[in-house]
Length: 117
Image (cartoon, rainbow, N blue to C red):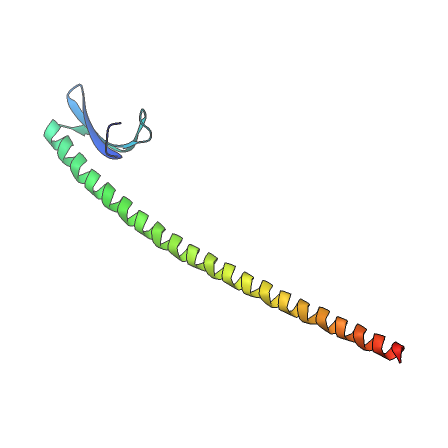
């Protein structure tokens, strides 16, 4: 399996003009164009623009990933807190239910003792 960058650039010539594209590797066989600029006079200008645009594009991507990671961490923390609260509420409910049943058992014992006398 070959290692390729997820994002790269491609420079093509159409007639007298050069086009530059920022590409994203979608799968092993398919790529998608994320950004495109047409009409450069020389290949050097197109390559220069593509390198600068790719660097900016990757920087924006990293910042976006960082923001999403922070949101995911917050969301996971809140979910963990909700699970702990739910477990605590379930334990409290079970404790109250047990106390209620014990109280009923005590009442039955008292009634049985009353009728036995």
